[in-house]
Length: 408
Image 1 (cartoon, rainbow, N blue to C red):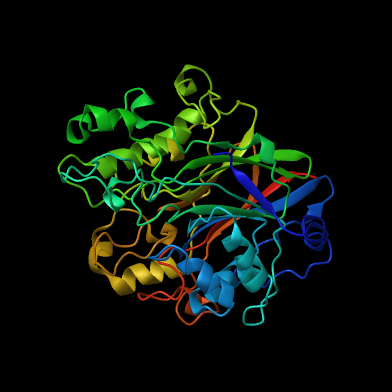
Image 2: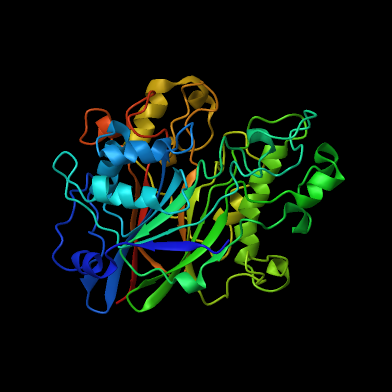
């Protein structure tokens, strides 16, 4: 299915999103996004697993339509506070007509939340994902076909846990590449547990649990490729470690994509075009990758495939709130090897696996980085009521942002 770009009031909103819009208040000191300084323009890129998913199809649309849903209002307020120019939303239930994105903008983002300045995104991108899409195969090996475990990606209905990109800058729709249908078995030297799935299912199983997108955005005089994904959690596994393996190889897809030549030759997008991203293209990897470099239960070295990639820069964003939460919550956090200031998700309600760094904004090395941060205010600080502890007012994940400097 061809990816769809939703544009609502594009000309008017694009004008509004330029000079003259009041900047939202930001809790931490950082240069304002979309600021032109001579020959350069600053752009803030963010990722946020906002947990805007619901257990039933259509329920998110109903909640969005009211304009009063407390969780959605809190999510919108976080976005208004951080004021990104481009943001990926993970776990935003997908609907074919893009109605959910229109409602989210009109009734939440473009409305002041608790006195915060509204934000305007004239350009958005969304496309189908694999979650909840029936495979017609017995993927969970329970002897029956059907249900969330037998979908191409775990989900109660098609589009659950979907993705969306919102942007103040033009999205080059005709150049978008999606990899929803790429088969796991086509990856050379993959970790696919063929014996668990059986030969027939293994040969058809899709690699992406949701999808992988290469979405070019025109910022100033430059094109920035936004590489978005949301690999499966490496948990809920049996001895075959199918989810750990899939998470690793979903992450590896981008590592291969950034390596032009033989290593990326196997990659074929949904339009049948093969190959990876040219060596001279600039990019930023965004999303909830469900993999911490030191802790948690992901496949060894999974996220290091990106963090150690020669084309990728890790800005190591941090927050004071993450350090405070790690100490206060204890539990699995006490045994962690990673520095808690880089954590982006609060998983101590279990109490395992503890707080982890799983959400990433990773720019390409030639790009100039101005600053980066995880939006996780300490207790009692402004904005802490929007993050909180379980049950969370917004999400168990935190927004992560990086400010880049590009040619104006």
